[in-house]
Length: 199
Image 1: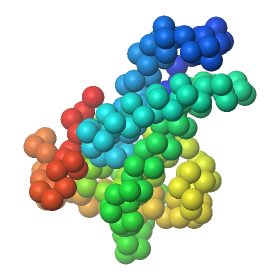
Image 2: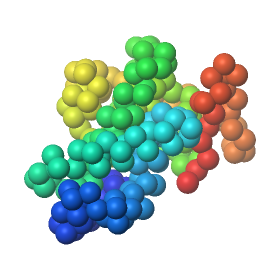
Image 3: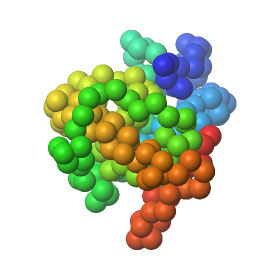
Image 4: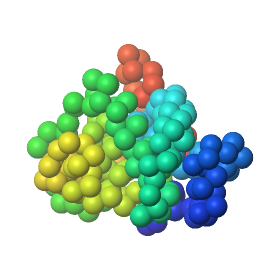
C-alpha cells in the first residue's frame, strides 16, 4: 500500500518554499492537509488533537524547509515531521505509556475486516499500539524506523504490532463490537478519544 503522502512536488515549488513564497505554502498546504490530518487523527484517535497537530506540522515544515536537501521525496520529509509532531503530542498523554500486555501476543497477520469496523476498533487500542499499527500497515514504515522514532527497539515495535493484531481480533468479534456501525462507547473521562468517522 502506497502512502497517502505520495504526492509529487516540483523542484520549482520547493525552491519557492525556501524563499518563503506564500503561494507555494498554500499549494503545499492544500495538497497535504488531508494526509497530515488523517495520519494524526488515526494515530492519536482524536480529531481535535489532529487539527492542532496538522497546523503545527505545517508551521514547523515551512520554518525548516531550508534544511530539506532533496535527497528523498518532499512528501517523505513532510510525513516524517507529521509523525514526529504526533508522537510528541502522544508522549504527553497518560495513555502513551499504556501497552498491550504480553498475554495478547499472537502472530503478525493483520485482522481482515472492513475499514469502518477496523477504524472503530483502532480507537480502542492504547496510543502506542495504535501508532505502531498505523505507521506499519498504512504508512509503510519498517520496524527499525518505527523503533527509532519512538526511541525503542525493533523488537518492541514487532511485539506491539503482534499484540495489537490479537487485541483487534478480540475487539472485532461480533460479541464485542456488533456489526451495526454504532460507535463503541468510551470512558467519559477521555472525551477526545471518541471514534473517528471514516474519511
